[in-house]
Length: 144
Image (cartoon, rainbow, N blue to C red; front, side, top):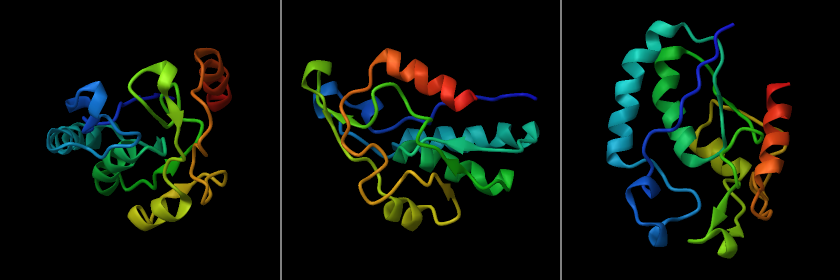
């Protein structure tokens, strides 16, 4: 089995100063261009499965790939960057946000398989900032 890991294309946060960042930004114009470039290369890989995090930027990146792969992206709560869905400029000031809700994902990405854990409280459910240790435990669970 070959495993390909791809980070989302550029989000608006990647193009902003930390003080102007939001908890779940969409792709930037450059991010959409990067996604279109990625599409040209992904076709040759013969992917058989696509698992994405519930962040908007990853869903939007997957949406660019979906038509050329023919795959149904699987949205998994266990797959997200360290920390979770947070808002705040510094780790000490970060506040957990809810993240996209099930209905928001269903509305924007109707053909996706959505993790049953995602409900109307959002995928992150305003939990506190995830520690590195907690992220390592989550990564092992995801790989299992």
